Image (tube, rainbow, N blue to C red; front, side, top):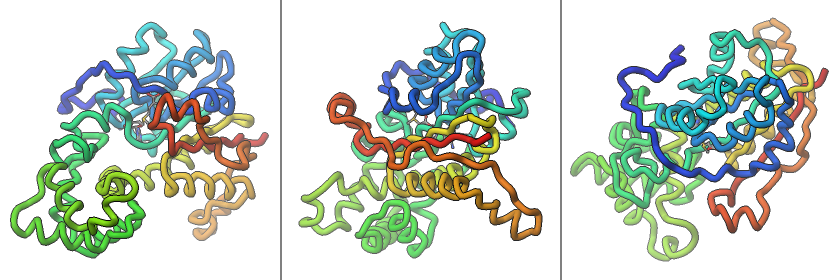
Length: 325
Ligand SMILES: C[S@@+](CC[C@H](N)C(=O)[O-])C[C@H]1O[C@@H](n2cnc3c(N)ncnc32)[C@H](O)[C@@H]1O
């Protein structure tokens, strides 16, 4: 488990302003107690981390995790004034149990997840997340992992590409896009975001392209989810977060698309009903799990004013739950 920035990853400390999404509701539902211990699983530019660290105060402790080494370096620099109360960790929140054990922390008062890519990742062409700026077809949040978006686009068979684009992008033109990708890469491998955008545009009929968001948005989302195994990380991370909560501790998740939100909702419901861990139960180990009380029956959405000020908040949904005693 790497708690420090891996030596081979070149780190960039960036000056960027990521306006934290749903900040007030996140603080309201997370309710970080003075002197408490709270984990921010997705530190990004440190916006939520700063607010949480301020609430827990100098006697409190915040663990700020990010799988992007640039984010960890940036948050560390931006939050230097808050001193020792924040521990920064370059890692994947799916390994939360190990991360807390390495820090000598047993239980926590709260866990926040603010999912998806950061403004910095989306706006930095070299990271390859953007369909609006040309860059290498990368999309790895953690550049220590071996597989890039280019590896998937050039290496997967057509059926698997179609499945990813359909399931993770909820893209109705998945079959055509996968077919066009396979034809294009037979001529030469697709290496840049710009090349992929051109292939997607050619695959989607002109009439369909004229409506709705950018034609490449769904395919880029799908590839990003696949490259970073975002749903696998969320499933494992949520379970680890709930297991780490003290009685009365709270977990709060901000998601940005329906696949994430559905997973959060279903996980909270299963823990709310006191269902045993299906894998443990199947193995005959009982599988008893902590019980949750759901705090937000419906997801909390941003106000019109927040969306006007920060269009990135448009699709955000927040759900929160509390571990019962
Ligand atoms: C939306 S940004 C967070 C922004 C942050 N709340 C702020 O106020 O600046 C999401 C961050 O989560 C990180 N991330 C996504 N999945 C992760 C995972 N499984 N483990 C750790 N970090 C993750 C991304 O690298 C990104 O920096």
